[in-house]
Length: 368
Figure: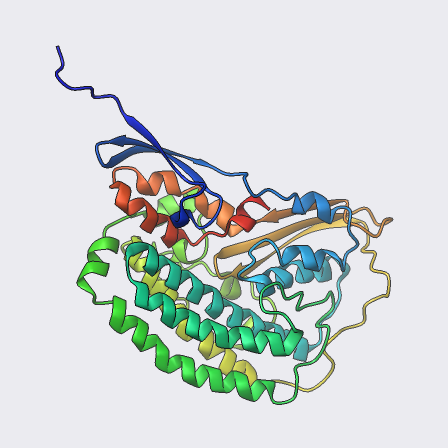
C-alpha cells in the first residue's frame, strides 16, 4: 500500500497571471515542482480580424493590422501593404522603400526593448525594465512625429507612405542611433555575465535546430537554435537587398541564446538604419495607385521578418469587389507558441515564466 498520493497536480497559470503577458492560460501537470505536461489554451482575446478584413476595403485593413502585434504595428502594416502591392504589381518608389525599412528597424528595436524589459522583470531584474522603456520612449517620439501615433500607427499605405518624413526627422533618427549604441552595453553589464541571470536562462528551454524547424519556429527562437533563417536576407523586401547586415545565430538553443540573438539584433538594426539614412534617395513616397483599389482576380502570399518572426499574409481577390475574398495571416506569435509545451516539460514551475518570455508572444497576434 502506497503511503503517499502520487497523482499529478494540475494547476492553472492565467489568464489573470501577469507573467503570461496577457490573456493566455497554461494548464500545468506537476510532479512536485517539476512540469510533466502542459496544455496551452488560447482564444480569450479573439476579435476576428481576418473575417473583419473580408468586410473592409483594402485601405481600411491597414488599421486592423495595427491591432495584431500591437507593439510592432509598423511591421504588420508593411507586411500587409506589400502583399497587396505584390497582388496588384504596384511599384513602390525607392524613397518610400528606404523609409519603410527605417520604420521597420526602429520598430524592431522598440519591440525588442519591450521584450527585454518585461522578460528580465519576469525573471526578477527590475532595473533593465526601466532602462529599456527609457530608450523605447525615444522611438515612440520619432513615430509620433512621423505619423501622429505612438502605438497603432497606420504608418503605411498601399503603394507607399501617407506622407514624407518631416523636416529634420532623419537627423533625429541618426542622433537616436548614436545614443542607443551607447545604451546596449548597459543592458549587457546588467545581464549578460550576471550569475543569477545565467543560472535562470542557460540550459533552460533547450530546443535543437531540427526540432525548431519541425515545429515551425521562426525569428529569434529559431535563430537561437543555430538556424540562420531571416526573411530579410532570404527573400528581401522593402530595401533590405541594398544594405549589408548580419544574421545573428545561437548554438545552444536555450533561453540565454535567444536573449543574445535579440541583443545582437539591436546592433544590426542600427547598422541598417544608418545605411538607409546615409543613402536616402529623393523622390515621391507613393506610387501610382488607383483611387479605388480593386486587385485583379488571383491569390498571393507574402512574408516579412517581424521582430517576432515570419509574418505572412495570404490574400485572395475575386477581381470584382473592393474587399478581399479571403484574408489569412500567418502570425509568428501563434506559430512560435506551439513550442511552449515542449520547452517547459521537465523544468520547474519557476522556469515556465522565463520560457514564455523567451518566445516573445503578443496575444493580439496569437488570437487575432
